[in-house]
Image 1 (cartoon, rainbow, N blue to C red):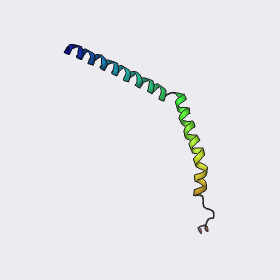
Image 2: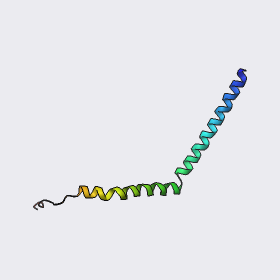
Image 3: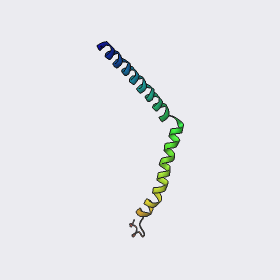
Image 4: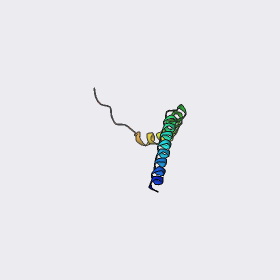
Length: 70
């Protein structure tokens, strides 16, 4: 009885280890792929293009003061 439980735990451990190794390999290949890189760049640039003009308008002053004498 105990032998069957230990065998089941061993098989479960091997399956979990193999799935973690396979999943990690797949994730590494996906993250280092050129498709993932372009996808992330497009998302970031899209967000920046939406937010940047409005934040620049808020930060620029309407008028400026006198220049510093030299």
